[in-house]
Length: 304
Length: 304
Image (cartoon, rainbow over all chains, first blue to last red; front, side):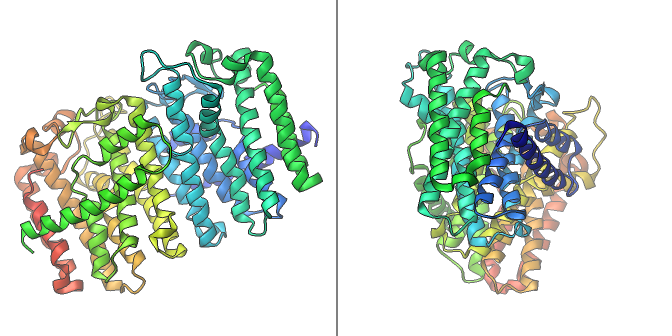
């Protein structure tokens, strides 16, 4: 699949997820400032990569419609909450995100904390909706998998390791091994990506062991490739294109692949992960893997 | 039921919930600093009132054991997360809680934000556990009810209204009507209390409409009575007994019942709510309501 065609598919998914989340925000009688902050955070032109993975992976098994859309929207809510909290002054202290002021800059810190808390809670409220059309037993497994991927054994654990690695809690943090960096990145950004693909398997009771394994490998390699591309953009990108401040990783002494592998080594690892992710997909899904495979190749050279 | 007997029952529940949460924290390979912060927040000698409500309300229907314990522990995790985030400098900026430094004072702000996020996520992970022994359909309804009670239409919405009422977002906030104060308190502290009682109904498929209504009324009146007692303690209590700074509400211009009703008016409203909550319980459950009724009376005169 060529890149323009991939982008059309990505945008169609993003519009469906945005419409779904927009409808959820319009429900009820709610503090307007909090709703405005949620809209600011949610509708900032994100690529919706995680929802795209849910929807395209479910499509591999012939599943479309409300069920994957609910899971995709719940996952995006979790991702957006994590960005709001990560940007806070006490965390990464970022002023810009996707070319706009971060939530605590556009509103205030208290509103940003509560907006993040709201989105994390909303994710589970979305999965609890009966109109998802997912049998309760499967929905419950998805709730458990999302809580695990987002929690202390997943994303939050990774964020904590990341803060530790940059010396937040010690005057002189130990130099991080490549194994530690791999682990923290697989938790911080990998866990939600792997969840996206696992959730499709929860929706598709007939997935074979080989198909599950292929999606898991693809998820791990895509997560790694995505992180390395982000590191490269931080080192080489222009902030106007990337949409946020660049060069911050090196300045903060962040534990990145780049710091260990150098630019050439990181590029080689990016190529390896791209090839390994594609091989896993192809072996299980053949030509049906075109879309998910195109995403891997798009990531290799994306500029934001 | 006399107060010493009530306290024995409350302490037995607290021990069971603590043991359950302690076992959850011991699972997995996790950043030790984050686990230490979670222990600091969770095991601070809280009364575990919300778990007590879940377990005693379920007992009204003859339900005991793993099912109510899971719901109780999930609810306590949500309550503790809300305390950690409410205490943050950007929110209420509290240094002490239950006689100990708050999490951001004992650790740091980033750790406190992530500890709160972890507990909110853990609550849903606990409900997703199969060993809760709750059929998936009912567990799913409990997930939905908890997400609603804790989210923007419940506790978080109430916290946002509270910040607005104290003039956080306007130079000159409008004077709050008693209706607004009632609404914000029913969201901020009432929603989780009402959830505790509703969850018992979700666990007890044979609950009658009259029983559901009685528990809902009890929950509303208890929530109100609990909040008024907290306001009175803030105005009249000693910080050494209460375990946190007192007199902060008036200083912050907080929208409280006390500010509207005065001390005598607040005491009268506390007595009315106590009597109304008890009457609702007695009409549906008779002598079986002794324990939940004792909690109402205990609240009326508690000193912390």
